[in-house]
Amino acid sequence: MHWRAVVIVGVGLAGLAGRPLLAQAADPADIQKLKQTRVCPGCQLAGADLRGFNLSRANLQGANLQNAQLGSAGFNRTDLSRANLQGANLAGADLSGAFLFKADLQGALLQGTNLSQTSMLGVNLTGADLTGANLAQSVLVNANLTNANFTNAQLIGTYMVQNQMQGARLPDGILQP
Image 1: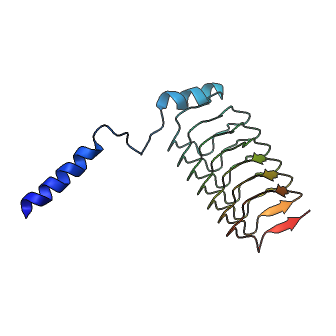
Image 2: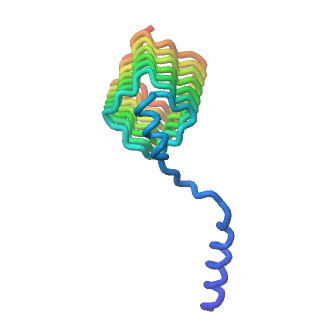
Image 3: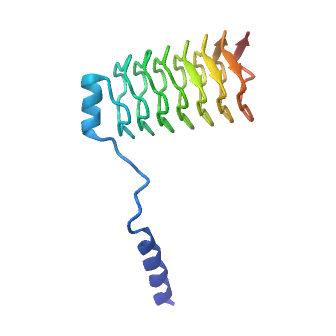
């Protein structure tokens, strides 16, 4: 009986050999490059702690910021197109005027975030928490808003069309044409 348990564990561990690990870490060279140049398309910044940094007008196209700590950071007019921001903490960040074309913000924390005048075409906000976020004058087209929480969000003048909104929580949000 003990022998079978060892074989099963041994086979299970052998099956993992050669497979990439799912957890990724930020590349220190990419963090330095971003801080110095604000130009870092495709950079590996997963899990990075960039809280409070001013990254306005940065180029982060296709960057991996999964699970990054970005609270209170400045992303004004930053290009985050096709960026992976899954599970990122952007609470209180300023993304006003940012470009989020096909960005993945699934499960992101966006409480109190300034997303005013932001272009969000094809963005994935599945399960994102936008409680108290400011989305005034933003554009949300072909976005996945499934199970997103917009409680107390400011949606004045927000253009929303052709979005998936199953399970999205809007009852306390302000929505005006």
